[in-house]
Amino acid sequence: MVDDAIRHVVIVGGGTAGWMTAAALANFLNPELTRITLIESEQIGTVGVGEATLPHIRYFNQTLGIDESEFLRATNATYKLGIEFSNWGKLGDAYIHPFGDYGLPIANVPFHQFWGALRNNGEMVGSISDFSLPVVAANAGKFDFPASDEQSILATYGYAFHLDASRYAQFLREYAEARGVARIEGKIENIVTAPSGEIVKLELGNSQPIEAELFIDCSGFRSLLLGDKLQVPFNDWSEWLRCDRAVALPCVGDEKPLPFTRAIAHEFGWQWRIPLQHRIGNGMVYCSDFVSDDEALARLQVHLDGEPLAEPNFIGFKAGHRARSWEKNCVAVGLSAGFLEPLESTSIYLIQVAITKLLELFPRPDLAASLRDEYNAQMSLAFERVRDFLILHYHATQRNDSDFWNYCRTMPVPDELAHKMSLFKKRGYVVQYDDGVFLEPSWVAVYMGQNIVPTSVDPRVENFNLSDVAMQMRALRERISSAVAAMPTHGDTLHKQANLEKGTFPKATFNLYGRSNT
Image (cartoon, rainbow, N blue to C red; front, side):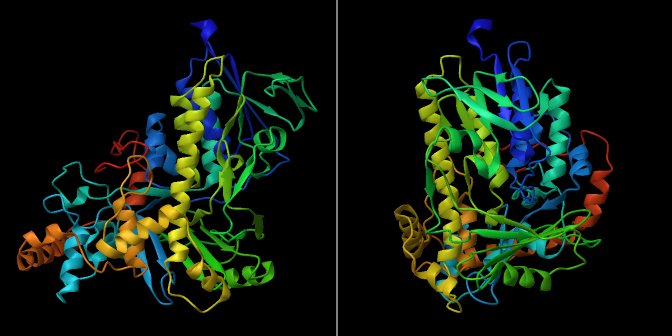
């Protein structure tokens, strides 16, 4: 009913968070009942350096009806099969966290349990990475789309993208404006609240005050509405995630972009390398307690693959999130709600979660407190689960070559993460949960990749003839090797698919928290 709908939603801030929110609301809300206005100022820049994603972005795009070929062209995107971590467990170590499975379970017992049993018995059938098709393909520079046949070895992985975040925001702006979203250029000079504390209107210097019933804060680190005006406290997680600075510097790319992101650990933080069609995104994430801006930039410049394409962009941040993402009639999305460093490419994913949960719990004019409470609980859980996975990368290290790594290796970690690590060390058991971005293969990748090897395995493994299992594993390794050998190169697939007509891409049939075979 008309009287039972929010009549006006105002989004404060553009960038990736603002235009993803605007596009999603424009797609789901009835424009005859609800107006959507986005306020942004060209004088206020956006962070705009996050260029790596998780497979869930395909679900977001396809839900909006966005064609993947258009998306590839508009954002200069490349394909992504995972993230390579170098020097994290020990200097000289490297592993890939893939978007896919390790092997195949046997009688519902996870593959890594059998691999661990054979390893403990001294029977090596290959690295566990040999049994991940996306890892083998990434190392070979290959990419092809997952198979629709669930029995195929080519159905055991997913994929994401490297993209130009600024171009993605522009692409979604065009999408949203075509569906009725009104954009206002201007800076907010005053925020007017009612005695109840709810926001009533925003006063701009160059236009009439803007009134609405629901305000969405996409103002970035400033958190103009939720943090500054409504004074929602910030939960500081920098005791576990010590990095507080980054410097971004894109450079000239190559003609054969790799189908994976690189995260290279240094003695004071880590460096990202993200290959796009038109350039390589580079950056250094570091802790200012252990290195200066000049030193971090100098280290980054040494490791560039080509000539710089811009001036260095320094960014300061603090890891953590607001105690509540929804306060009164204001919902924060993106950096205004919290920030966790881009180590596992979760920034856009957390924006997507926030938007999805808002749509699921979208309020009526009465703004029921129960909706806010449920939204806040789910968003806090999403942030905490990503937080723990990121902490694992820093804490599960044997590095002792710098004060930074000595701190990370010896620091106390959250109780839930300590519990998860203990279970894996003792039995190879991966704690499972229904809602969360990182599933069992992701945890196995980091545990094994950073030398956390279980002392024992699932007792159900004892019911199997390990010699037969070893024979099956060797056959599986050959199947993966042969499948990858027959795949086209990443560059060839990218060139072909970016030039196809609409409707030629496979559907992403996973939901927000998990992926299916495609």
